[in-house]
Image 1 (cartoon, rainbow, N blue to C red):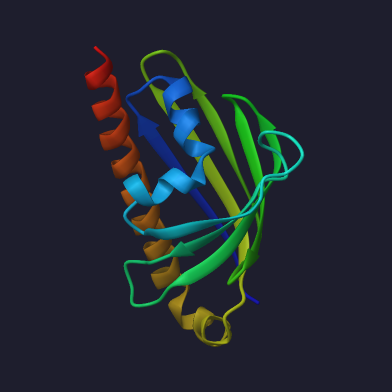
Image 2: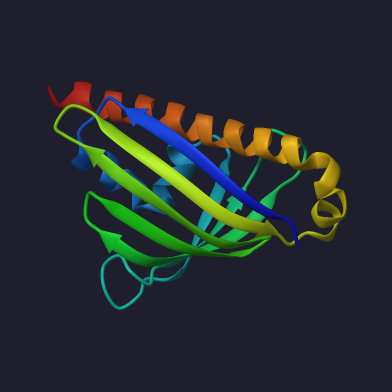
Length: 157
C-alpha cells in the first residue's frame, strides 16, 4: 500500500469558535464542502468529541469516489483534533487550530495509505495526480467554510 503524507493549510476569516463548531460536526460538511457526498454516524462515543466515528462518502475532482471512516482519537477544544482513518484509505490525520476572534488557521496533516487495489497498482505513476486531487478537494473545503462562516458572521451583525 503506497503511503502519502499530505499537508494543507486553511485560512478562514472567521472566529475560532465558529470554525471549530463546523470542523467537529462532519454531518454539516455536505452543506458546505462540495466533495463530501454524505456522512453517516457510526458511533457518538462516550464523550462529546473523542471516540466519535463517522463514515464519510467523498466525491473527488477525478472520476473516483472514496469511503473512509474517521474516528476521533484526541480533541483539545479550539486547538487540536486527531483522527484515525479506515476504509479506502488507512492511517491518521490531525488538525492544529489557531486563531482569534477575527480569523482562524487550520493546519491539516494526513498520513495515509491507499487500500483500493487499482490505486495501489497505479500509485507509482499516479502519485502526483492523487496529490493534486487531494489538494483540490481540500481547497474546496476551505472555500466552502470561508463562504459559510462569512455568511453566518454577516447575518449575526
